[in-house]
Length: 101
Image (tube, rainbow, N blue to C red):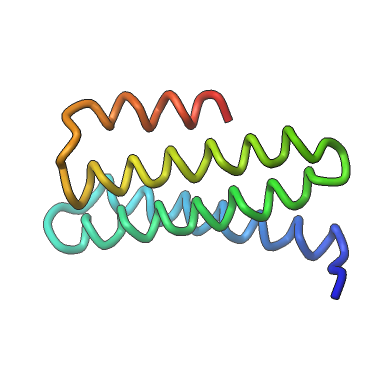
């Protein structure tokens, strides 16, 4: 079922707003609330990247796919830094992927 671009744009904006709010909460709080906010911010960013890529798909399908993949890689690296802390330089790597998006 095709969805209108206006609906996709509204969903993209909604997920961006959630990302900003939960990202601010992740920076403001420590402990369990900060970790939960960080995870939620990363997951909502994945939603924003997905809807933004689907919004850009009619213009350039390959570029939309690239931006969606780079956004998701950056989010997963940010999640890894917040939760697992296995890779020592994931903070810089996630910013690299966010910057190229």
